[in-house]
Amino acid sequence: MGMSRPLDACGRYLARPGVRFAIVALALALAFAVVTRKLVQVQLHPDPDRIVVPGVVTNVLAATRGGLYDRHGRRHPLAESFPLWKVAIDPLAVSGEDARLAAYRALAGCGAFDRAKVYEALVSTNETFIGRDGRVRVKRYFPIGETADRAVADLLSTNSALSRCATKERIIRRSYPQGSALCHVVGFVNSLEEPLAGLERTCDRILRGTPGYVAADASATRRAIASRRRGSREPVDGNDVILSIDLDLQLAVEEALDEAMTNALPPRAAWAVVQDCRTGEILAMASRPNFEVAAFGSSTPDEQSNRAISTVYEPGSVMKTFAAAAAIDEGLVTPDTLLDVSPGLYCGRPLRDHTHGQSELTVAQMLAWSSNRGASRLGMMLGKSRQQAHLKAFGFGRRTGLPLLGESAGQTIGDGSELNNIRTSMGQGMTATAIQLATAYSAIANGGLLMEPILVKAVAAPDGTVLTNFEPRVVGRPCSERTARQVAEMLRAVVSREGTARRARVPGYTAAGKTGTAQMVENGHYSTTDYRGSFVGFFPATDPRLTILVTCEATPKPRTDGGVCAAPVFSRIASDAARILQIPPDDPDEAP
Image (cartoon, rainbow, N blue to C red; front, side, top):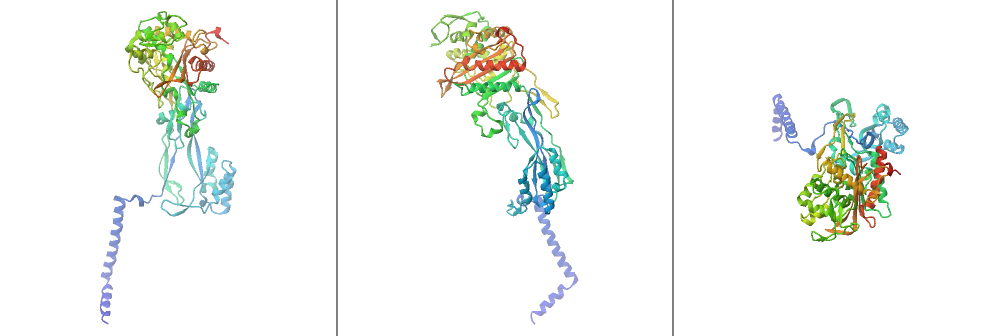
């Protein structure tokens, strides 16, 4: 009885209308305060791990990467991108056996997908996986393949059985139709379109387009509701890059190097450059060993090396040409000036030589017979400062600026001694790259003008409109036109029947050039077994069109001499180039 009276009083108190209203109002206020606090927390201090993504689907619209083409444009693709549709099945979107059978017949009938994979995707209604939140979820995405057939892609949208369960995603694939040809220049992009090498990497900003997107509200099955778009942007395709390369000539150079690498005494490596000596355009550039572009990931650094621009080496006697050009240009000698080539000490060192028993040779004979003593005499006449100045004027000691990674600069001087100076005139104690040598010889061929090497000829929009043309550009005059003509005439004798490069003769054409043989440097010392043999020259000598350089590395004896290992490759490349580019013969007496 004692407890009942307070409870009755409390009940009577709560039964009052005003009290009940106050209690309900207080409860609502507390609830509102809790909700308000939570909203403030979410807006001002959100927890990234607990954010709920709105029901919006954003589909990326891939842009097509621009293509790489040879000088003739889209007729000769080197790298191209093409659209594909990646198709997947959502088996839970198909209700009933009849609908599932209709979808299977439609997909199997188009012939674009593996029937077993299609069937497996349609019946996989109970397959599960663990989501990021740790929950078990039913799998609703089963890829069945890719197709480039637009008719098949349209079928997925128009067929009533497929429009519910099949999804398609437009993707871009990269193709390299030339295989390993020009691999060091073209380079490679992976499946994510990440550029890894070559022009694919250095020209990525030009080639890469801008992706678009479509954002729309999502349905219960995470599909975009077309009528409820949130925003969109059309993709912008990348631009095309047109190279100066002539693909037909490039393939001929590749074949010539392959043949050199399969000789009875093959070199360890070889490379070649073909340049239009009038414009500086690179028409072909190849290196061995090489790699298959599609298998870039499994290639080795040695195979990936573009030796035509990255390998610096002592060129050997091909540098005697520039010692002669410098001395003539300085007015110290003429082609007929006699040089003392008698045995003796040269800066305190004896020099081996091929003087045919003569104690004096003209400057022209020095080049034709590749006299070390004669070249040393020219180096002594010039002195260190003048010889260095002329070498730098010809482009040695600095990069040419080709749009490729890994180009080396080389060096024009060693320790700066007088001994080093006369060795430089023979092509030792200094280093150069193949592209430097080819460009310098082009300056001799074209009358003394140093041209900027051109590898990218133009940039074009996706519709073919040319956006940028890279015109030939003179970057220096290392010697006078008269000097260049005199040196070019002397170089013709090197390719004569009496010269050191008679194997470089081109049937039906006059040619000019110089051999070079140099010991390779290993561990700071000259190797007694491994050599680099080179030949660099131009043809037709009467009206030069092309400069061609060939170098064979680690050539075993007796093929160490550039006139033996490299000159025949020059001859073959020149003959193929004459046919491909339809260069008229200028020496009927030498026709086969």
